[in-house]
Image 1 (spheres, rainbow, N blue to C red):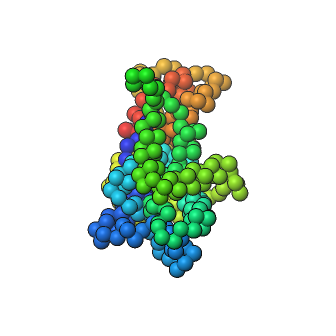
Image 2: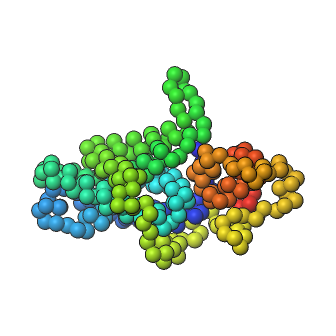
Image 3: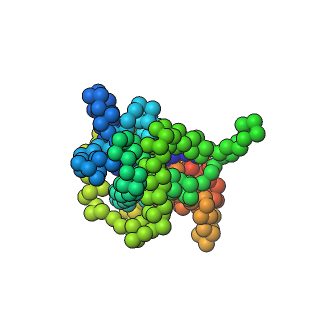
Length: 292
């Protein structure tokens, strides 16, 4: 399973969120204020502390949680590449707000004024992302260790399990709330999957984050019709088979596989036509197009 091009290519919103999460965690860690984070009954229903809701969205409470959390956020950048930065911004806001609402309801039901019931960190976003990860990301390889069967997706699930159990009940609660938020998004409640922010909001992230982080953007390979890269004709004739007849469409599974790797859908389709529906050859075509 491949997350597509390395770095934050075509994922500016993910880059901004990861930078914010890392900075908030480092800031509170340096000041030794991790114990002030997290949500308790008093924080919400006693003396309402709005700032704790904001900080708790971004800051993890320990270095191991930060490492596993940022790894998962970085991997899930594939969804921003699939649906675009604008809709991914909607997904982030929806997941965080819905999971926060569920967390507040759980804290209100438990009514324990003595302990912090919810650990801080973007658990809502991370575990909401496991819903499209489970349904939409195909398995590309399977293998067996002793008598146990694994796939290339198993390592992501194991990282998520580690994060879910990192603080026991305090991390299980926001994790489950995030899964519920992701399920609501997938069910398209309130037609949320069609919602978009004004374009300038999503593009704002590409301006404020550091352009030097991650892989540099590939030179433009788009033609005037839109997103389909223009492949050098001689190179294609020399190295790749002749395209399928125009009446034969690439399979949807093959297109989905390439899209899950971070490639544009239209580019993936054209590459599959050229590669006669061979995913490996189509991947090489797309990678070569990016390198030019």
